[in-house]
Image (cartoon, rainbow, N blue to C red; front, side, top):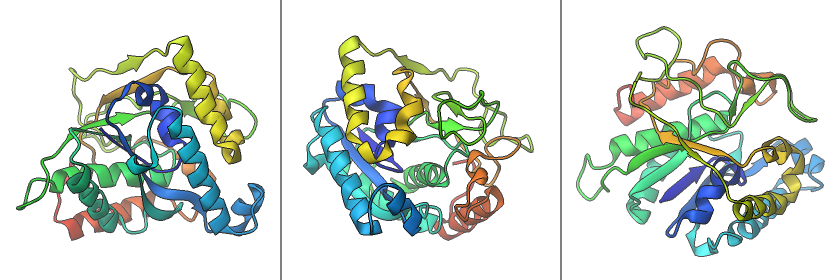
Length: 280
């Protein structure tokens, strides 16, 4: 299995229990977890962005060591936090190179749900790379594409925990929507089912220790400690040029230089460069 996550700690939030049960797992991160804005590094106790990124790599290594994933099976694509959307075509090719190197039977990644632009960029790159795989000589066969939950603002609950900005739904997927509708990118599939992993007490304890290892993200991961239940599903085919849900996207509440319309324009441009058509 290749687990492709946007930021260090996303893999634990979405699949910390599954990682403990996997025997042959490579974990790759699209970003280094450190935004370019100096305020983010300072808020985490660092003077320079580079020091913040290095700390996040150390935290990642310590967390994954708890479930036996050594540094040799940890990969970095090296994009700055909040910038994964800026060149989606290049990111798709980078993921395709990972598929060629790792040759996984299963690729596990984020859902397209409007929670964070880097999450959506990672989902786009995974789907695009799988679409490209196997279409030319020496390219790898396309793996089975599976996704884990993160967070989104569609039908969200009341805020959970200090630091939440507006309503956010944690640990549950957006419902499938027929992709012929104006809003909703997912192809309807009445046979699609979620796999729900219930952790044992020991697995829950290890997951907590893995989250503890990400000390610089203590406030961010706090809301995700409430439940160790994990939900996985076969990834639907997405229309990345359609909004993931009606209304305001969760990341549009923040000054990250990204809006839903801009993100979708970048996706449309990348699809043209890659020669791909939707749904992916």
